[in-house]
Length: 378
Image 1 (spheres, rainbow, N blue to C red):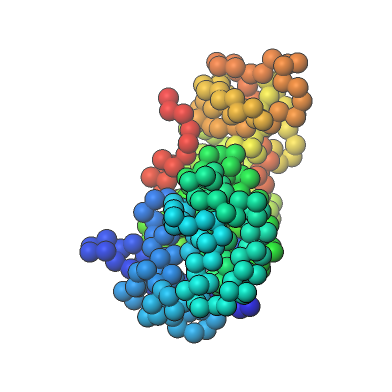
Image 2: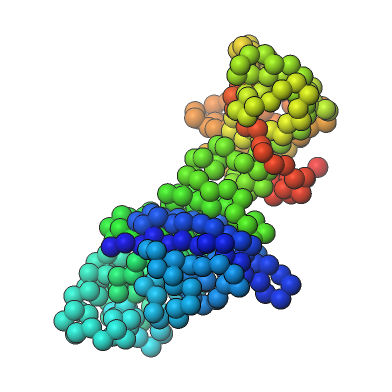
């Protein structure tokens, strides 16, 4: 079944506020596509326009090449799964799933067959006759997904569907939702502000900010090669460096002066020349922290610093290290039994090392994007 959804130069305003600003985007058939961004960035407004709950002020919305911009919601072959479940409390699980099929005037036999299929798909057959108040949050959301899929839409719109659930349940339902997508094979448009959700479930992510698309790509591309400081900071944590190129060391590597830190080596993943200003992103897990001075490789950067903050996460520890005028975040994975050793602690002198290839040059940097970093303050 086809299901390619396209937004062409779509703009939506609410008074003087532009919620969606000239967005062009294509969601391929059969893929899970996530709109990711902070509250107020326009992602839910874009989804609501796809569903027909809002009308764009400019632009078109196409489904498989057909203009659906002016179609009412009930005429669109798309269904929505909401954050708050939106189940009918007086109907059983079976009746909730069957609701849309009855509205479509399908035969009783077809309805029964499709409802049984959906109950099996979301693993709720044994709860078919229960009312929603007897279900857990995760079970309620699975009913909502089954109801939305029952009449076989071309596109399933998911509006922060797991936001009301606790962390472990969200993680479990992400796996189940991914399996459901593989089973039904239709297009999923998934809206979330949670980077982990988007990274886990998506074939493609569009990162939104202030009504515009900052970057679109596969999860690994978005994380490893962010175009802007907003994307770098919003998708996980990062360290930012600003400076100027001083020397070209080879076809691949250059040297840059970072005021307040010193000289470091960088990868020329974008064309740079001596004198060019650069903005660099370096993920915390790329930095190796040690008590003893490491032996440098040819293209390794090595800095000395002092630990100012430590946060233990179980699987890893994050350290904030003062080096010159910079406060850098480094992450150490616990691959061995941690209680057999004495890890670095507050005020300890340490060494930081990373390969020049581990930093990534940004196309655009904004100082306010540093506020997105979830780092402890001094």
